[in-house]
Length: 172
Image (tube, rainbow, N blue to C red; front, side, top):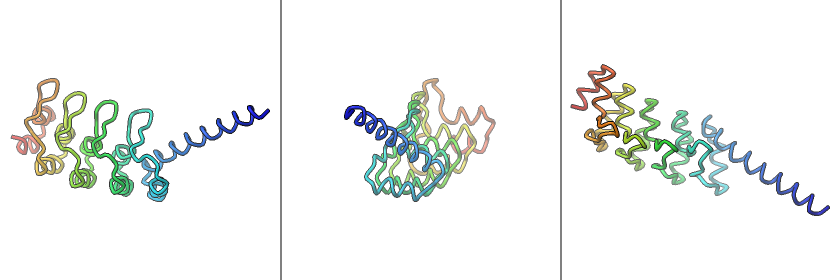
């Protein structure tokens, strides 16, 4: 009988831990700074990864959760961790066009020239998705416009493909 109770307790504890982990991922998605503060204060792993390989910081950035991102960065989250495709939080900010988050990441030490599994850097995302303000920010922070992806293309090539002459002029 003791073994059954012990097994039930272990199952409940495991389920509780899994629920708490899922809760923090939801908290960063919804910019729930109170939940993020409690998570950090409890000494939990701020570089936790979900089943898709997204860190808390990547999810906060991708969902434009500025306050959650600030809290995670202040708690020393690793700015340059990558998801399963090799994308970083900075790449997510540049894909989505979130200038304040990209600026926060860069001033906090994110690597502007880190590349994903295709060899694309944050500059590729900013150029491809038409964010000239981010292209300029990345260049101001030593973003390398000469990086070539696995297809041999540079960020300017993707801007040309989109017909974005403003970004092409920034990158030439």
